[in-house]
Length: 346
Image 1 (tube, helix red, strand yellow):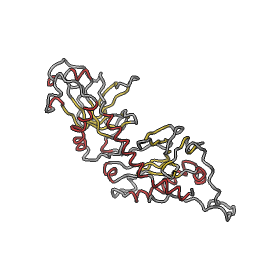
Image 2: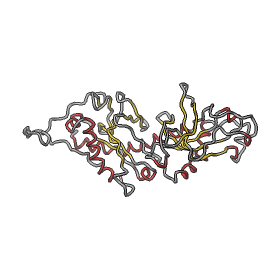
Image 3: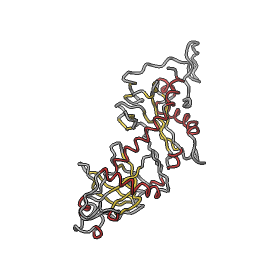
C-alpha cells in the first residue's frame, strides 16, 4: 500500500472512532448511579419519620464533593470542597425522595438497587442537571449525569436525600478527580501524549499500556478554542487545521519527518461534532495509527521503540528520493516522496 493510500485509509475510519467515543461515555454513565456516600460522612440519626432525619450532607446545587477510596473500594473522607480544588462530584440539585409521589421511599423502604437508581437518575437528575448547565453538556464528553444516595445507615435512619450531579469516570466507572466547574471547563474526553488507546469489540475505547494491543498512540492534545473563536467549526474546517498540526505532531513525537516515514505509521486525529462543541468541548487528540483495508491495524509496543503491526514487525518502507536539502542524487526508479499530510476523508 503506498503512502497516499495509507493516509486515505486512516482518515476514512475516523467517523467510526468518534462513534466509539460516544459509546464509551454512555457505558460509564450507567455505572455511576451505584455510587454511595461515605458511611462516615455524618452520624446516623434515630430511626423514625424521614421528616425528622438529618441528612448525611448539607451539599446543595453548586457545591463540589471529594472523597478517597479505601483498599477495599469503599469511599472514605466524604467532604465538600471548593470546585477549583480536586473533587469527584459537582452537585446540580438536591432532591428529597421522601416527597416522591408514592410510598416507595417510606420509612421502612429498602435502599434503591442499582437498576432503580439508574431510573431515578433519568427521572429526577437528567433534566435538572441540564438546566443547571444551561443545556451545555457534551454527550460524548468526559462528564456524565450521576447521583449519590445516603450511606446505608443514614438511609435506615430515615434520610431520603438524593444528590444529582456530574462526574467523570475511568473505564471501570470509578469517579476520577477533576478541577473546576463543569460549565467553565473543557469537557472533551482526551488522552495524554504517550498514552495508547485500544478499541474493543463493541467499539468502546480504553486506555491501555502501550505494550498491550492497541490501535492509537496519542501524540498531542490540540485546543481548538483559539483557532475557531468565531463559533462552531465544521468538521471540514477542523480537518484543514488538524492535518497540518497532527502531521507535525507525529514528526515531533518520533523525531523528524524521516522517522515518521520509516515507522510506516500515519498521523490521525479526532474532531468535534457541532453537538460536542456546543456542549462545551474544545480539545481533540492527534495520534499515530496503522491503517488497514478495513480499519485500524493492531499495534503492540510504543511507536518510539520496537513495535508490531498485527503481530508482525512492519517491513521497512521503500527507499525514496532524498528529502529537500539533501545533496544525494535522486534515483530515477525511486518512488515519489510520501505525502506530508493526510488526504481528507472521502
